[in-house]
Image (cartoon, rainbow, N blue to C red; front, side):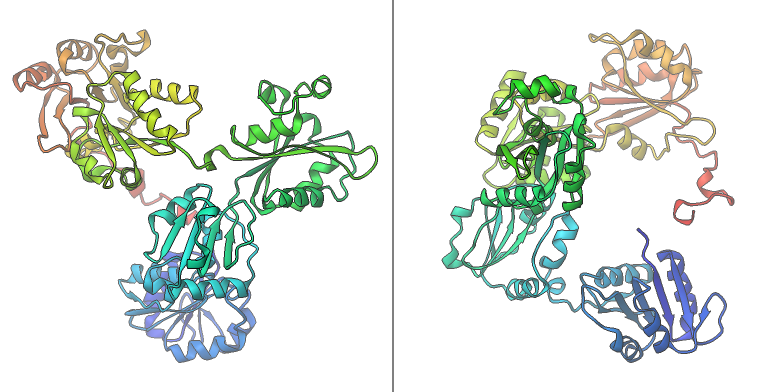
Length: 606
């Protein structure tokens, strides 16, 4: 969502700078007491600010700090309601957040403005200066809920920035908890079970949890959206008081309603008044409606033949909760209630499968070879892994140097699939983190399908981190854009037909008819056959490149034309780690992209 911004130009000599910021930031209006081109004239800065303080998300004063302070002073309320206010000098050297540095975003905005101008952002907020977490922003940043009052939050922040003894409880996992673990300050100790926390050595507890605890010290609770509620009810069930009843039962079992992510039920119940009431009560939740077919076949704790005869499933509440959580952990199996005679209802709660702490496998794309071309996420996965299983000679061992001390690093080059599975499952079953490291991008000739089938069969948690593919590395090494405006707009990633047959419709000579840029993998050993097929569609003088071990220390690139492709490969003894590139896009410098046409409208201007 765009933020409405007022630029208050106190110093008219800074007008060009204000106009530059207006273009870069978007949705800005420049105000000046002088009549200047492109500015809205105001009679008084202080009167304008007083009348408009609540109408703008951000104010940028360009000029003296004193004027800025006197203008906003009568309007200041608190950091949770005030807009972001930034002041910069008329020469564009210093950019200073004045009000709402964290919650209003003035600190980050000052950094953005400074980056545009090449200026220095002067940040005074203590947590920013020390590079520690902004506790008052974590909930919004990661989609968590918190019932913490402003006063409680401020007390927690004071303890935190003063580096008192802090314990961090993470009994679930999500993107936010992973970030906290990765950026852990030295004075914060992390725990994964409440019972393990030494409260006699703790001044502040920070907990990311759907569970309710009564800590003996000051506690700051963040509620991640990881609980899934399934609901069933009698037709036209009276909803009065049911949401409150469900909350009471959840709390009696140590579960926080603030962590509810979804409310699920069967399609038969989608128009029930109860569902509408629950949606209104828990506005943070998403309503999930499932057909009987989607819920059938799920194993639930309390199947009912009677319910099956009416709905087609053996339990609406439990089935919907299990479905919404992705087969997660049972926290509250079927509960029955009746607050109004004849208005029976049932509900159940599960924990999202992806939030359950335990083993996990991350399939990571290592990139084409250069250790610096792995993604930032891929590097982080390697740094936290307990086991790194990498693809032998296809992945440079230097990449495994990112692994933490004590991690097990093994090559799969001499393992069959079963041996690989056995090793990964051994670590997984111990609740450890496994990285399966593949060359390039694992989804392109990465042989991960069999592994995923195995993980699925055992209900294992896994995820794919993409990587840079060798075809992208080839474009960079060749200094070529693989698409030519109005001539070549497609890139084909394929392979020649060797021991593995190609589908009839994907024969090279048929694909070549498009005259697209072709990147041909795993085909150096059958290059004569590849050349023969390509010559059926491409002219003999079509540019080609044989790219050997792209981005490795041993990288070699041989250019030529199609009629000489086989000779180039054979004469240079190129092997399976060679990518063949064919097409007019190689070294092409002709054609003007629409991006630079005078009538082109950029997205941010539309």
